[in-house]
Amino acid sequence: MTTGRRDFVKLAAIGGTGLGLGGHRLSIFSRPRRAPLRILILGGTGFIGPYHVQYALDRGHKVSIFNRGRTNPGLFPDAEKLVGDRASDLKSLEGREWDVVLDNSATDPTWVERSASLLQKAVKRYIFTSTRSVYFDTSRVPMTVDAPVCTRENTPVEAGRPLPYCLAKALSEGVVRKYFPDNHCIVRASLIVGPGDLTDRFTYWPVRIEKGGEVLAPGDGTDWVQFIDARDICEWMIRLAEMGTTGTYNGLGPKQPRSFAELLHGIKAVTTSDARFTWVDAEFLEKHQVRPYQEMPVWMPSKGNRAGFARFDISPEIALGLTFRSLAVTAKDTLDFYHAQTPERQERLRAGITAAKEAEVLAAWRASR
Ligand SMILES: NC(=O)c1ccc[n+]([C@@H]2O[C@H](COP(=O)([O-])OP(=O)(O)OC[C@H]3O[C@@H](n4cnc5c(N)ncnc54)[C@H](OP(=O)(O)O)[C@@H]3O)[C@@H](O)[C@H]2O)c1
Image (cartoon, rainbow, N blue to C red):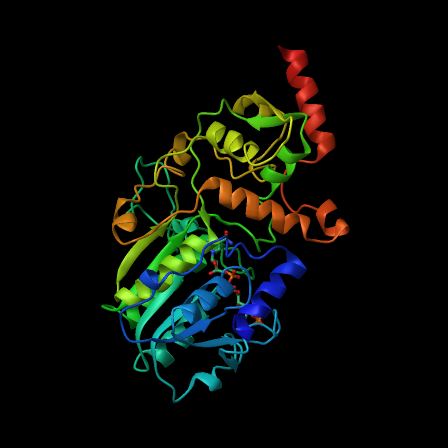
């Protein structure tokens, strides 16, 4: 184990578990056959970045990470650390060359304008971490990368406020395409989940189900659900870098369509919980102000302008080597990560309905039957 890897695992132990390098070990067969790449990662120390960095190091690449040095600064002593600020200071990137840049940290198209213009002649390919949120319209079934995205015309911007996320990321993609017209790779990730995720969106479900008892479950169980384990998407993005892949892709799974009932029962299967699911229809939840995706995280009713939200055709991505850990691995590693956090942090989940409101809605549902 390298020092970098030791620190990575140590960070996981502070915030969680063994970051679920997940029982996934590199075999001799999965090592790259190509020459090592010089990879610049803009970001690298938050949730998904460490998975990129570690996987790239494990595969023999030379990694430089660029950030402000604030988030988890002790990570990865084996990687080159370049300090700066995407908003104001890119000096440490000047006069350098890399094979690939992987841009994780952009939340503002002006940041991408600065980095892409500076790196245009200094790197061979620009890989951009984008998001499913760029889609203006997710009504299509199946969804594909050519569905309409947010634009200045269709997305209102409030004066003096930051750009809405969908627009900021869609415009950022445009900047990447402008400076790297033939050599960009854009990956639009869905919700990214797994150990290390501090948003608790997916985490809500394993934690709630493990507690047991009557669990408020949204809809009738037939709504579709797609998300991606951070390790699956990050490892794939490094392999895309190795293959020299260009173009725009979606990053989500699993391979076969999964319903919400399959999701909740699949999570329950990794616990010894006595959880019982009470499926409450979407209209009733709406009437009781239970918001999809926020109080019922990960869930979006598969209808109307969200009909395709979890119905992406991912055959192009699978053909390019996107693979998926099992739900059991993701759920178990997420639970382990949760249990390794402090009791105070465990009590303050950042997503999901409160226990009091859940009980209230379940009681109202029973009374209405
Ligand atoms: N989480 C999801 O479900 C999800 C879904 C779809 C897409 N995404 C995309 O995933 C990306 C974020 O992932 P992540 O946060 O896990 O990435 P990360 O690369 O692990 O962490 C973000 C990095 O950005 C650096 N950073 C922040 N502000 C900076 C600045 N002003 N200048 C330079 N560096 C800065 C941080 O370090 P310092 O603080 O030390 O600067 C940190 O290293 C975003 O592009 C987001 O759109 C996420």
